[in-house]
Image 1 (cartoon, one colour):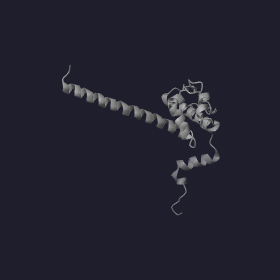
Image 2 (image 1 turned 180 degrees about the vertical axis):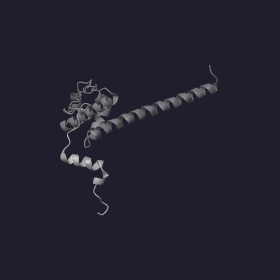
Image 3 (image 1 turned 90 degrees about the horizontal axis):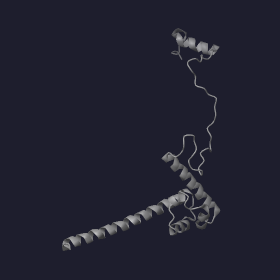
Image 4 (image 1 turned 45 degrees about the horizontal axis):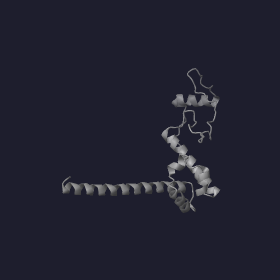
Length: 165
């Protein structure tokens, strides 16, 4: 149908495309593993990290699955049976969710989040009674020491001579 050289070129292009697809898939897999490992390190899961990593990777669980709640705490218990490491991971994921929401602007102006899982009211804003001075606010009354300082500043002759010191 096509000349032989065109068929040969098409075959080589298909082979190169197939090789590229394999490399791209491997790169995605490695990036997913690196992100998962980074998440486990942030959660301070150092001793059991390899076992947890292999369990999560074997099940095809990505960091995004952990972050968006696709994996429940009950399901996570299968992969991380010890409560301490599991709770550290959940706290780390919660912190990452909150950081991402802040970075993407999902935190609403009144300080609450659109997600029921996130609370931003850990440290409420302190209330204070400070009022900005207005033009109608009179200056504070002069005290005797302030009066003296003001008069010294206004007349250079009343300033002490410090050149002999």
